[in-house]
Amino acid sequence: MEPVGYRPRQKKRTKRCVVLIVLLLIIVLGVALGLALSRRTETFKTTFMDRCKKFEGNDCEKIWAAFQQAYVGKDPCKVPMEAYDPLIKAAPFKPSCNRMMFWSKTKDVAHDFTDKRDCFVTLEDTLLGSVLDGLTWCGKEGSNETFTSDCPEWADCDDNTVRSFWSRVSAAFAEVACGDATAMLNGSIATPFSQYSIFGSIEVKRFNSANMRSLNVVLVTQENNVSNCSNASLKDLQKELDKGIKYNCKEVSEAQIQACSSNTEIPCHACW
Ligand SMILES: *[C@@H]1O[C@H](CO)[C@@H](O)[C@H](O)[C@H]1NC(C)=O
Ligand SMILES: *[C@@H]1O[C@H](CO)[C@@H](O)[C@H](O)[C@H]1NC(C)=O
Ligand SMILES: *[C@@H]1O[C@H](CO)[C@@H](O)[C@H](O)[C@H]1NC(C)=O
Ligand SMILES: *[C@@H]1O[C@H](CO)[C@@H](O)[C@H](O)[C@H]1NC(C)=O
Ligand SMILES: *[C@@H]1O[C@H](CO)[C@@H](O)[C@H](O)[C@H]1NC(C)=O
Image (cartoon, rainbow, N blue to C red; front, side, top):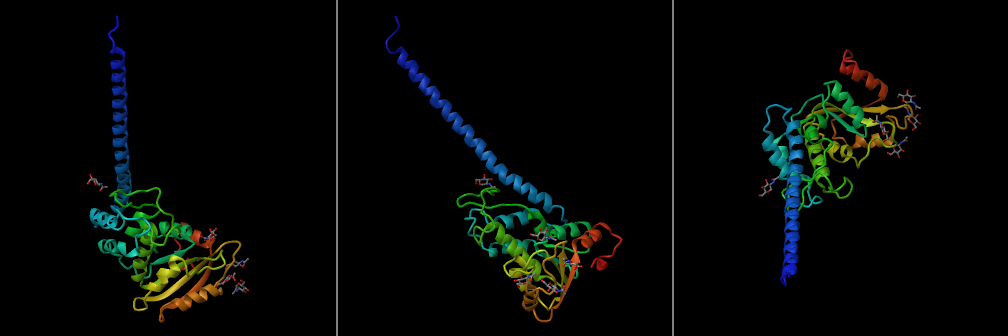
């Protein structure tokens, strides 16, 4: 004879077992999630450090700390460009007179050129620009993590983590522009100079005639050119410039720039 209450006790035991397994699962999942979260920050930090260490003579841990304080624990839409001031202090921009190249809507051509020839320097060739180029990051209120997904897009809000970073470093890069500077603009679009671009809204406004002698626009043309140096938007650019900065504009075909990128025997000053 089975004792009464035996089955129910076993049922109770099974129930307890199920509860225990569920609890264990929750703990395991929690730990895994925690690890994944911290690994997310770790992966991002690893990229940051690896890229940073290519530039000698910098304290990359200190730069990372100054970078993080700008956005960690904050609403990713409420990070003003000033939040990165301590970062600029930790990794100041050094002027490279006569070699600074600005670009707008010509990122690939400009970088293909500066990657192959070292006569010009774009923002993305500097420490801060190259460390963060192509990356997405943001924080969250109540978290000390760095997230790399579900961050606001460029146009979602003005003061977003990534956009404010590029605004701030662009301002710092333009502030140290000196001698003869170059700007690669796009001749395949109707308005090669846009007042709403980073170049138009931030960089041009920071150029200072005390340090900068001239701005030389290289208007990159393709087979179906749309604009030329007479375009009215370029007249607006000229008006925006600090008085005393000379302005030049030259139409140069993309093919000619590419030829110069790949032939180091052509001296840089002869590229256009
Ligand atoms: C200019 O802009 C057009 C349209 O966005 C793009 O297809 C083209 O590659 C750009 N030209 C250069 C030289 O970057
Ligand atoms: C976040 O804070 C926890 C607890 O203070 C700490 O263990 C962890 O290392 C921190 N993570 C980061 C990315 O700072
Ligand atoms: C520039 O382009 C306009 C049309 O957009 C054309 O009328 C003008 O002749 C061009 N100027 C030069 C110098 O090529
Ligand atoms: C030249 O610039 C003006 C704006 O400043 C623009 O409206 C016009 O379409 C531009 N392009 C050409 C090809 O004329
Ligand atoms: C495009 O620009 C090149 C170089 O400035 C010029 O020689 C050519 O005539 C232009 N083509 C068109 C269709 O305007």
